[in-house]
Length: 276
Image (cartoon, rainbow, N blue to C red):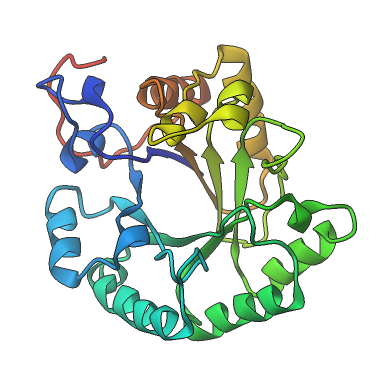
């Protein structure tokens, strides 16, 4: 089963009846899942999570990023990691109770390479959340280097971690390859960042993220990615379009759904005629 969703809730005006900032309710009219980065900045509390749920159908799924401290970004401390882990687990209880939590996304920073200490930390995270769906996105290519690739995937299988298969530009440094391997029988996530090589290598300033993800996938590229999704050996594959820099994610995601003949029966209401 393939599901499709977006990141950046407000950045898809083509999905909004007003043509302005989109909402969760707007996205739920077209997609069965969303990825939220709210958790990266601060663990959401249960009251906020309940507000999310009120905007979408009961079957709608959420991928929620773990906090920056939990993914060992600069400034994190052991005390903050422990506190954030407790706060995130508490805040996500409404989603857990209603079976709406697809995954907690652990997006480790580019400098987080292979070390014994980092492997130990991954094991600690699994022990801290023994029953929750944890997804890992590596952004340091050393995890996929020939010396470590199979041991990385083996470790993730052992810990039942959800592999995040990324599509991004292939550059001499600062990118990871597309490794089409499932490490969890229930779910694999694909995150599609676009293939803007120049933007990936040269992005600077406050708008660096938009520079990186300013890319529209061609029909042939979407076909290629569809073949990858269908070959992944998990019961579910969630394909997340993150190529928001030029406003292309929603159009690409809808084209991908049409291409693959996907149908999601429990979407939220949409304005008649919008994008149909």
